[in-house]
Amino acid sequence: GIAEMTVTQSETLATLHRVFGYDAFRGEQEAVIEHVVAGGDAVVLMPTGGGKSLCYQIPSLVRPGTGIVVSPLIALMQDQVDALRALGVRAGFINSTQDFDERRVVEAEFLAGELDLLYLAPERLRVDATLELLSRGKIALFAIDEAHCVSQWGHDFRPDYLALSLLGERWPDVPRIALTATATHATHREITERLNMPAARHFVASFDRPNIQYRIVPKADPKKQLLSFLREEHAGDAGIVYCLSRNSVEKTAEFLTRNGIEAVPYHAGLDAGTRAAHQSRFLREDGLVVVATIAFGMGIDKPDVRFVAHLDLPKSVEGYYQETGRAGRDGLPSTAWMAYGLNDVIQQRKLIQSGEGDEAFQRRAAAHLDSMLALCETAQCRRGQLLAYFGQDPDAAGCGNCDTCLVPPETWDGTIAAQKVLSTVVRLQRERGQKFGAVQIVDILLGKRTGKVIQFDHDQLSVFGIGQELTEGEWRGVVRQLLAQGLLAVEGEYGTLVLTDASGAVLRREREVPLRKEPKRPASRSASSGS
Ligand code: ADP
Ligand code: ZN
Image 1 (cartoon, rainbow, N blue to C red):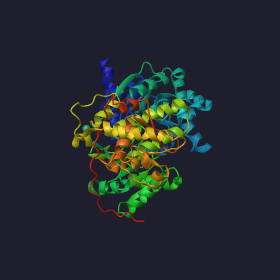
Image 2: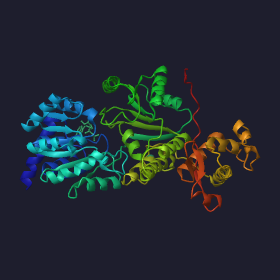
Image 3: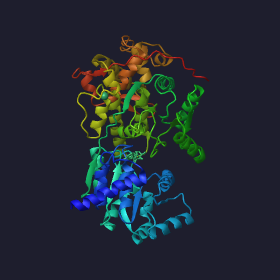
Image 4: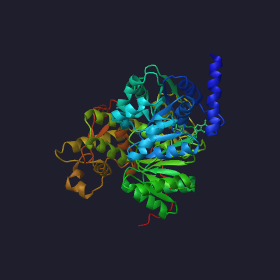
């Protein structure tokens, strides 16, 4: 009844004030918390920084018993628990980093009803002893964090999550709350099905992060481009730079340091002590830049990250959104900046083909990459495209805070240019056993007599030198956009360019190929590359 509701409301609000020291709930928090406190199941989709943790922490405090939090982020559990304990919350965790005695203490606390929150790694729930332990204590709720890990179609699948469907069978009266910052319609459905939560109420927060400005620039000399970006727009700011490989993480961190920007590397190849030290410096200090592989950032809660830069293409829109979402949690203006070029496309396509996984896995990876490329190549509002990807309605007029809204890209009729590229590919494909990539195609179009052009008599081809109207950079842009549009494909470990089923229509002049104009490269500013 109404009276009951008021009691719950005042109790949750009182907990928010007293324990966490906040004035008011944000967005959907209050609705979620009331629903779970009342014993209902919930599926919560909220962007990074949206405040998911309170959605299960407060109900765990308000309801009798211990809130069991399933999280894959083992490395963060100690920090999370320490932070909660500092607030006076009785929290503990059980994971593989503990020794036997530490674990026994936590287990005893749980059984004695002395824990408000208990964090568990998902693999623990496959162990009978854990289930046995849980059934001997009192459970307030199950929170399943990073719930998208249950989705085989997602970018972060973890088989251990599949076992979580048994929680509902074994504890039908305990409310469950699944939370994620990553969910397309398909993932959302899969979470509900696989976790077996048909009766759950769904709370979908807006995925828009209006204070983040999205920008994607053509890659020329990425380290120098990054340096100008930092010097001109983010001098003295804290931020994260993502690179694909450990090697480029190291090199980029060195380069920034040499150029007067304080930067530290972070990747799985560094020892645990160094990683922890760099992470805690980032959290503590003002204005430190962390150059990292995607190993860095999951669950890191630093409100004033002013920029996230990508020097390499993320594998999926989900990944891009999650990584860029680490910027601007405090709501102040922040930038998501990325440099992206032809080699990114070729490299990622090669990685997928030569990578592990069955055919279905590769198809999925390719579909993820295609969505990412579409975001890079769009002439429309980037935020609009992101929101549409997550099934949310964008503002038809554009957002006014992304590069394509701020400087609308020009498009041009690239049909003839596309035909020239595709005709060259056709001619090279006829040379049995020879494999040629983008460099050779562009050299032929430009009429360059390089060693490799002479060696294969490619200056004798009818297409030799027919592309003088564009520069080398522009041709690479054309090839990149053809790859992104699926009019060209990459094959094999050398990145050989081949036609696709869709190429024929272009060669037969049955369709046009609109292309985005390559923005003029900003005048290169002095940056010492050092040696
Ligand atoms: P998520 O898990 O969704 O990424 P968090 O739960 O880590 O987000 O919350 C992000 C930040 O917002 C944290 O610093 C948290 O303390 C803060 N926060 C959450 N809810 C509130 C609130 N109602 N009022 C003020 N700050 C909040
Ligand atoms: Zn926009």
